[in-house]
Length: 223
Image (cartoon, rainbow, N blue to C red):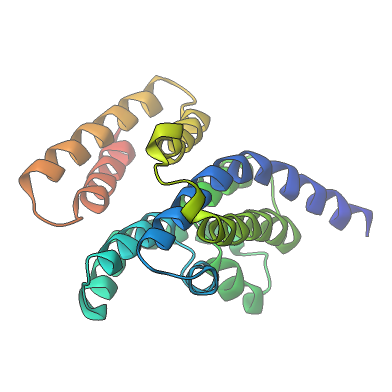
């Protein structure tokens, strides 16, 4: 019992940096959603069911532009293809976890929670208690911050003036630094970043992230 409690506390503590990043980003998304005509209830349901920051930003922007549902669904799918790679990386660490828990845990997987959990999983074995504690803590903060942002959206007409737009890339940079263990990791990070920028300007759509990730991963395995 004490071991489970320790893992729960550890998971919640590890979620705190994610929470600190999610609050301003989620609030900014809620403000954008209010500008696009979404109510706090609609924004809350989107966060509860979709739970994908970048995809939600895109969806809100497209909804505000009057785009129909099918292009939004296709775009969201393409943007979130990278989650296949996240789950594949975590899969070996789930061998000791009860099979019925894995689909539930997988729903809560995001860029940020993956970065934290893969770092911890590589250091020691972890049970489902850790993953649920980490993921649900982060999830709850995201849902509530987007709802609050949508509810107060009319009071803050320009989130960029407050620097909210930098919260998401700033959080990603912090998570990247957690992975830079030696010169080889730095090299792969630089290669991945260069490839993503290259593909962004040479290939239409949102394929730059998934292509850069796959190629950089292959180079990393070779190195």
